[in-house]
Image 1 (cartoon, helix red, strand yellow):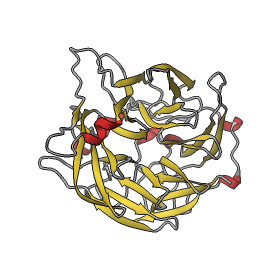
Image 2 (image 1 turned 120 degrees about the vertical axis):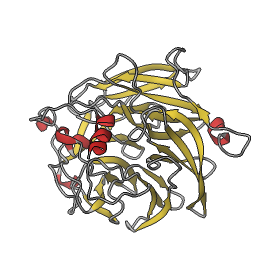
Image 3 (image 1 turned 180 degrees about the vertical axis):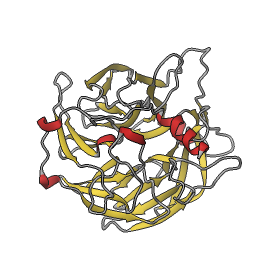
Image 4 (image 1 turned 90 degrees about the vertical axis):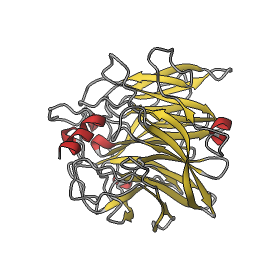
Length: 382
C-alpha cells in the first residue's frame, strides 16, 4: 500500500483538498442529447487502464495503447502493457504485449502514432516507477498490420513521455512533468527531425536520441515549448494532448489545470507565438487527449476531471475560437457508454471514439472508482 500511495503522489502530486465544484458554472455551455455517448467497445478484464489511440484509415484499424497503471487498486491484476487492435465494429483483438525489461516494472505505453515507415511509435511513461528521466519512445514494427518483434528504443531521457504527433518532417512529443527547479509544475513539447527518429534505434549503428536534461547547461533547443502549471486542483502536470489543424496551427492542453493553448511557426520553422486561448479552469478542469477533425474543423478535447468532451472551432489566428461543451456526465461505471474518465479521442467515420481510462485520482475528478466495463465510448458528430 505504501508503494501504491507513493506512485500516485509521484505523478499527480495531489494535495489533501476536496473540491466542492469540478469547474466553473458550465450552464453557458449547454449539451445536446444528440451527443449522448454510446458504448463502442468493451475490453477484457486484464485491460482496465486504456490510454491513447491511432486510427489507420487504410486498414480501418484503431490501435489502442493499454498501460494498465495501478493507482492503489490492489484487486486489479498486475499486467504488462498492451497494444490492442479494434475494428470499425468495435471488435477487440489483443495484438501485442510489451516485454518487461530487467529491473523494471513495465513499459508504460501511452501516446501512439504511425510513422511513414508503417511502424508504430509509442510513448513510454516511466515516471510512475522512476522519475529520473527514464521515460522513452519506442518503435514497434508492424507486419501485415500486426505488431511484431522486440520494441526498438528511439528516444530516451524524457520525464513523462505522453502524446506523440508525426507531422511531415517533424515529430512532436509532449513531456507532461518537466520537474523544473523552483516551479510548481511545468510541461513541454519536444520536436525532433523525422529523419532522426526514423534512423534512431533502427540498427546497431544508430543509437537512441538521448535528451536527458542537465540543469547546468542551456535548455535543449529541441524542447520548443514550455508552459507552467498553476495549482487549481492540486495537480502539477503540464502539456498533455497535441494536434494540428489543416492550416498548420498546433494545439495542446494542460492536464493539471485545464488551460488550452495554440502555437504556430514562422517561415524558418521556429515557434513564432504561443497563445493561451482558455485559462486554467475556465471552464475546463483538465485537458487530456485532443484531436483535430478536418470535416467539422474542430479540435475535440477530453476533460478527464469532469467526465466531459469539449470542442474548439479552428479559426484564423487573429480570431478567438469559440468553445462548445459536447458532453458531460457524473460519475458512472460506463456500462451504458457514458464517459468514465475520458482520456483520449479520435474521429472515425463521423464518430468521436473516446477512451475511458477509468483511473480515479483522488477527490480532484468525478471518476471515483475503477469499475467494469473497461470501455471506449462513441459520440456521433453527424
